Length: 451
Image 1 (cartoon, rainbow, N blue to C red):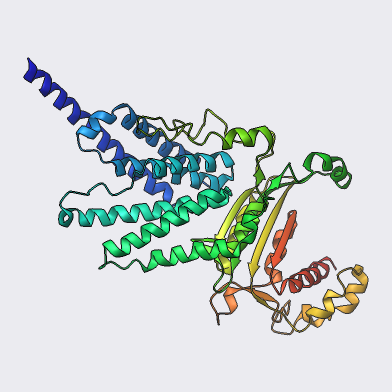
Image 2 (image 1 turned 180 degrees about the vertical axis):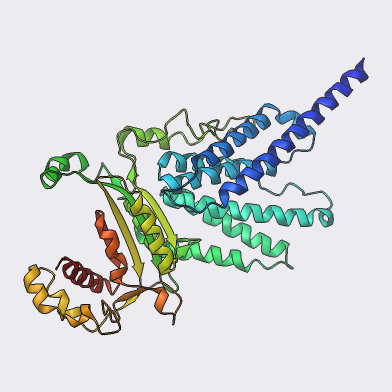
């Protein structure tokens, strides 16, 4: 009888382990499918995300309910960490597409649980190192990628203490990898470490008491409504979408988040405040139990039962962040967002790039406040009407560089490239030494085409 019981237990463990592996394979396939979808805040297939969240919900709950049997069948702690890490990635991708803070907070909760439970720590000590070394290297790469992703999330959430801790742990991990795997080149990860150190050193505002985000404690959002309403008697516009991009040589960045786009990202986020903020920051471990089994979050469905956002604040505008785009790619994304911009909405475009000013820029800066007639008198008609070759606008050298040094032509962004998008309410910020050229150039073009 005892033998039969043992056999039944063994068969049950085998069945549980087989089902778990099937769920892992299914989740991996769906994860790869959504991971490779380009991030576009206006066009992303919700049904794909619902499917992948559904299978990861099943997988996560299955491993929680059958943890003991799975461990007996050989489940490693890093495998649990890998599942939790992928769920965190899914939440982060959803945040990047929707700008909903609840997804970013859920991602943070998962990553925090992975770190606290040390799921990626070396667990092969005392085992045959020569046999385990290749597997250990793969595990170290997983841990390095986890720290890089966690740092991005902590940066965006402005968790200063967490960022400092992660940088220290990340540096120790890189040093350990270099000393343990001397035959492996970790130059890429040393560069990533240098990036975050440089980023924090340059970003002095990161240490300021007042956040870059819009905060009710410091800003006068409710009190300003009556004053703002005077300017919108007939039409109230809402900031619905934003595109942030930068392209500079040797710019300060961490992974694909440059310092310029990071600061603009912070300015377009609401900062939780008051009782809600205190409640959220004093409960960092509310999804982790005390028996060593992580429950980083039971809410891994895309339709969350608990809203983790401050209900007193409006939604964040959706943001598309482009890292070093070409001019054609930038124009293409702008066109897509403008095409689907809701009525009575404003589209904010932030471009930070180096540029070159043309010879006629200065004379046109002086005409910015002039009337249409006086401006037309100052504009040389030949610059618009061109020559017999059919040129309609001589832009000279008024452009931004969106390409490597020495490139030209298709990698230059001219003021005229943005004219078609002024049909929609547009808020344009050009952060460049050549921004005045865009201010004058756009006015010239607009007044010419209205003539």
